Image 1 (tube, one colour):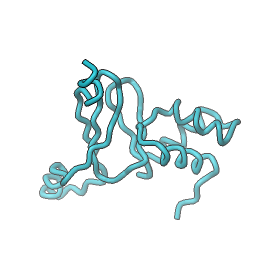
Image 2: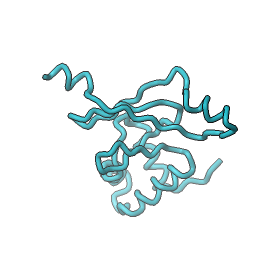
Image 3: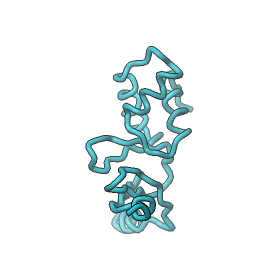
Image 4: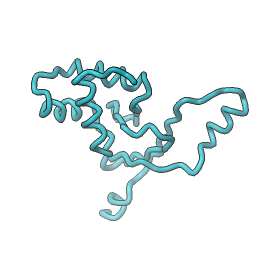
Length: 125
């Protein structure tokens, strides 16, 4: 088992309690409620390490921010170009992983992002 610091545990707790795919700044604000003196740099360093270790996902949807996901199971993301929300989408199977395996490549993580308009934004038009 990995030895986590109090800061890293707080970050994981915050991430585990949301499915909104937050940015580092949002996570920082939430973690400050648990550890008031934590620095933004500490949050960034821990998010980077957690992502490198495969404990969380780092997602770039092209909005200028890095987003984070506690769920590391194989799944896709649906990004709404109007409201900016990011939703999880379960995959029946991962076609890229199948192709990769046929070529002898062993995938560790696959991140899919589909861009479009969410149901809420479509309804409100």
